[in-house]
Length: 87
Image 1 (cartoon, rainbow, N blue to C red):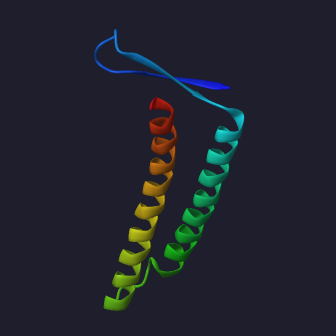
Image 2: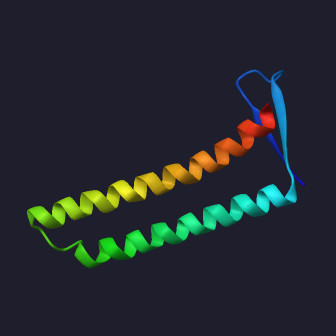
């Protein structure tokens, strides 16, 4: 079991979050899956990075948007686990 401590600006307000092994394993698997998708986006961007046309700029914007959303999903998954444990 992993223990995470959150401390805010007031030392007296400490919380401990305990995540069981299955939760950590599932969260790790979800993050690894999403990182794989992000790697795919990186490879896609590498194929068109040197192109400069209106269509390639829109494609780059779409890839960047997907990358941002992937990062956001990772952060949300982590936050949701801690929010569930805090309640």
